[in-house]
Length: 210
Image (cartoon, rainbow, N blue to C red; front, side):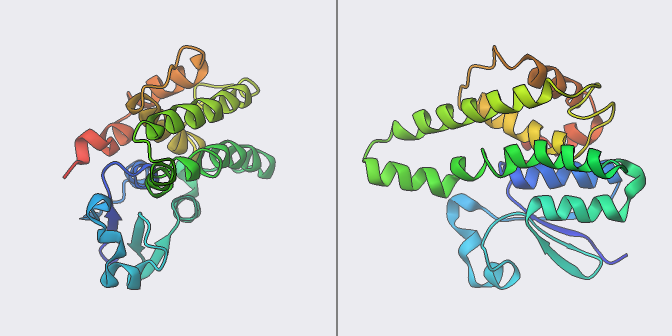
């Protein structure tokens, strides 16, 4: 296998998801830090690699992959025995629904470039915190209700799936922004179980910060 390279930002939720997946599959990789605060994602070299200018970008098997969930599904198909996605088609749909509820409904409106624009148009620095707390709490409330329909130790079943890879980084963000987690008992329980697993521990932002 050619060298695996992850273009990463330590606090990016999308990058965090992919780090967990790589760790779960036991795939070693080199990290290239893309500092979003210094606009390195907008450099000509990086845009040539990822035209969207987002992280992560994963170079693996001689291919350049973008979009975290598409990357995770590629890895899941590469190593189906690792269980990132269930074998049953209906179960895969359920896992996708949980993952998408976070990665497509919460994450995009709480991304750094969106919140920066909110602050610009409102002229209020405090708008950022209010925005984050409102949309993360609202989104997690819906995910909590979805999780009430599932059984097992994790978001779907008794081993982590793509849904957990999305949930854990979002919980990290919720705590970072001071979201009240009192009503999200199932979410907190799953997050606590994931926190005990080496693949999740090694991917945590505090462990990879550069």
